[in-house]
Image (cartoon, rainbow, N blue to C red; front, side, top):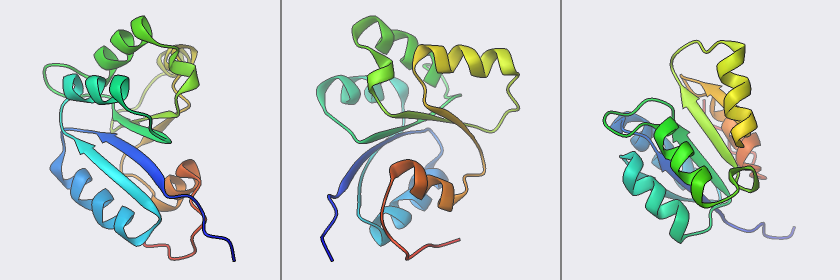
Length: 130
């Protein structure tokens, strides 16, 4: 069986519980997880590094995921990045469409379903945790 390439994922979220959950999750799968807890640092990491997937929280204090996206769009083509946005709020179709037009691949409702996360990251692994 061929060994799949280790996926490099950036998580930008202010919730430490999400970081802890995804760190454990990434340790069980073929994922290198870089965790950032604020949007401004997340923007710098995105601009300076390449990631297979970027997981971005919609609402963060001070500098939200939306702020990050708009600033990122001024500097690069967001649609060429694999950005998936997390949110706990119910978003209306107009807001979802606006984010997708900006380049976000998908909006994921919290709580996060780990099976869906595996599919988004495209990890070939049957060691699923629920």
